[in-house]
Image (tube, rainbow, N blue to C red; front, side, top):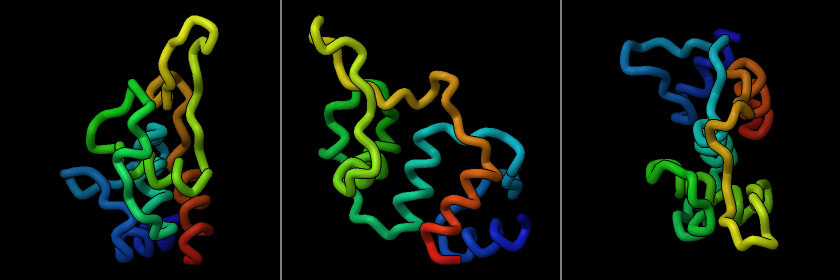
Amino acid sequence: MKFYIEELAKNNVISGYADGTFRPKENLTREQFAKMLSLAMELPLDSKAAAQFTDLADWSRPYVGALVNSEITYGKIKDIVRGEHFNYSPGNGSDVCKGDGIRRIRGAAGI
């Protein structure tokens, strides 16, 4: 695992926490995973493509937008009949295990 973390960091796909740790056993939010995956795949970033999502932090919009443009993600609709907004669900308990996420990103980046 350490090798993959070091390779992803070397390729600027991940940067870890301010204290210099990566904490691979903690979960990733869907927003963090979107950032890592879009950077690993070198996708063009696009905040506007994530405009339909009402539950994203501003920092994550370009990365989620990149995945939307690449048809990797679409998000979720709460209730289309009632006209509720699209959600990306960044923190609804559907987090990604960091170790698993890093393995997936490593594959996408060809590392």
